[in-house]
Image (tube, rainbow, N blue to C red; front, side):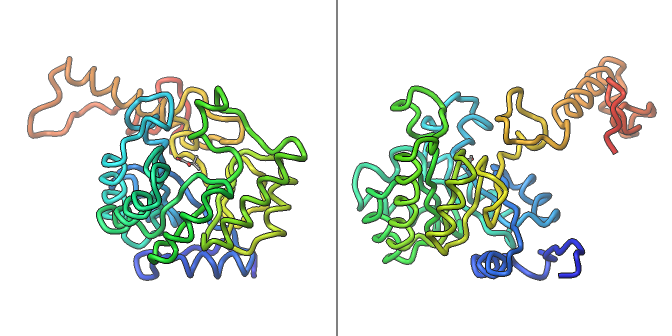
Length: 292
Ligand code: KIV
């Protein structure tokens, strides 16, 4: 490595699961972000993001619910297909929502397959502990690439009584490592670990070989994922590990308030573009923060 920033030219080199495996084995970290629509997917692909996760966080980010367990399967399938249409050269991961893989193995395999066929996903993700190993094996047998999401599992929210992180006790830490090992042995080709102490991530990495994506689980994983809206400064209360690196919420608000003003001034609707310089065009928000 010469230290330069290596990026895939996604217009000519599609990112595949094989690419991610190669990056992981070379020690090159890959970047994943959540994405729920084709337009954003197009920009994220142009930016060189390697994996787009159409997460059940769409329940919160798109539909306005407060819990991911409210995400309807059919809506998530449609969003997944839209993301793949927007980013055909990027790995798209469809997130199996609450109850889409719990009621029976047959339903689970069928729903996972729907993510590949209707959703055009490259891989499905499901929140799991070791008890899900048999259904993961059935998915693998059917030819469905699976990413097993271990550690903190937000779909357990009703049971845990809130979004609390795990892995802090020795018993919990051992269980998470056992979950990851069992799910990989069952056929999961990728793992995702959420909100655990860094030491637990290290143990999982020692015990498994599949590429591991982390979120709030330390810097060691082969890849990192964040909820896009948290990264871009669009959410009011991002989790502590989210590191917002933009303030797009303020930029959107500023542009929209410029629009309100231009409409009021009857400068919108004609053929000519508004002659005034808006805050966004000049690169500043109303608070004066530079956006370009
Ligand atoms: O649904 C989602 O966005 C996720 C990430 C938070 C990992 O599962």
